Image (cartoon, rainbow, N blue to C red; front, side, top):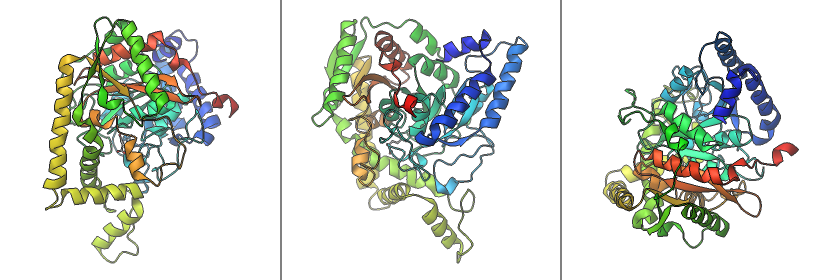
Length: 486
Ligand code: GLN
């Protein structure tokens, strides 16, 4: 997609302005039904596109991302453009600064079409926790697009953006990619800067990409990876050219691990068969497939749902009704009352649930039993992966246990919602890179995704395997029919 559109821009088949207008028209046409965007920045998008057209007209060389319209998840700070994290408490917050990933995209002359919907503060797997509205899955409007980057996924698959940025803390890029039939790349923790991401779980948050093709994810990673002095957790690694990885996809001798604990009873049969089928294809193409064991992954959900609320309870402490956004002070009796009233009215149910669980898990007397124990088990999960990667190059699992579910079907059952993350959270707890790519459809024509996990900083091998599979299958070329009917 990216290279194709870039070539057309430089050969002047169409201008960046025309391209941007076309995307804005699609947003106008489809988004009333899909509800992917919280804010559309049409005017500045056209200004950005015009600037690129001027460069092309002057014969200036433009980069691959220049003039290509993108959507940005609304928990990523954008200077001068509302950034709400889909929360009432930040409903009118306009950041005075850009996240590092946005700064890097601006330096490459990208066009920002707008900001996309998510579960409030990225807590969730369906966008139903958004304080504003639920985004609909373009494959079936009665279903969720996944979450929390559901708006970003829905925007890309319905052709309302060339690509989108999302964030992934426990699966929030991979699961919506799986539910919408897209490529979703979650880089190694620390490979891309978190500066300017509204913090959820600082020890697992990463920015990443929702794209139609593996190649696009590789372009974006090449552009946005790297050490950032504003984020002390970024890794200093040699700059890597991920494009090379996909230019020569190969499988011969690649060792693929299939963790027996991830192919379990209760998993949707069609999902299971699609992923197993994909692995068989890879094996036929020359990969070596081995069964492996990740025994502590079964505690992934339990660990994640202690670690995450603990960090959330701390990270959301800054929203006090004084410094940021929403404040309910007119009828407050004193300062404490301002806090109570602002936070009481500003946070949604799930954010409050996480603040309470996290505060409990961190409080004296419970800390050892919950938070500390969770961190110890987290170390075991990390060790499991380390051991596995001595034997294999990548690990393949389903991305999610099911296909996109009906809107409302899990909304009042937080545990059922948390189980959505069963295959994605161990990877996040270990800080590893993973990609979800389309590998089939169920009998209702809903997309199925497979997750390819790499070792720390193993993006190259992961992209290689993903690009190879994409090259010999055509799942990624299918588009939701509904769009033609809208
Ligand atoms: N669904 C997970 C959660 O609710 C993951 C969210 C995310 O990755 N931001 O925490």
